Length: 83
Image (cartoon, rainbow, N blue to C red; front, side, top):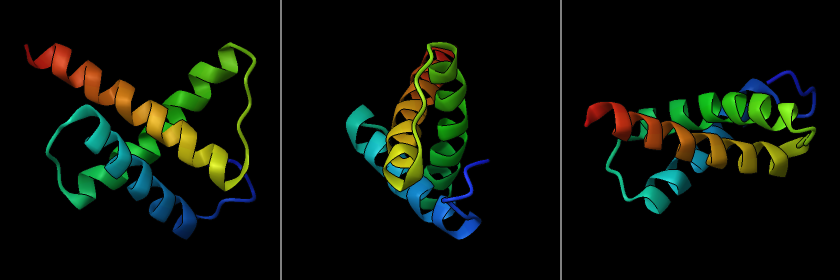
């Protein structure tokens, strides 16, 4: 969220889309608010993890990809903890 090209409103919209895509991909059942949270937090997590690998994603599309990857990671971790 430190990318100046993506503001807070765009982050919420893109985060919601990324969370929804991850929800469909991982076949989980969550609400709209949780999708937004997953997308935004997932983008932060994915940017940190990808940054460690030397990969940098920027702009709206990069935020969407990072949000999707991160949300999938968060859903998988939550499933592992739940078991």
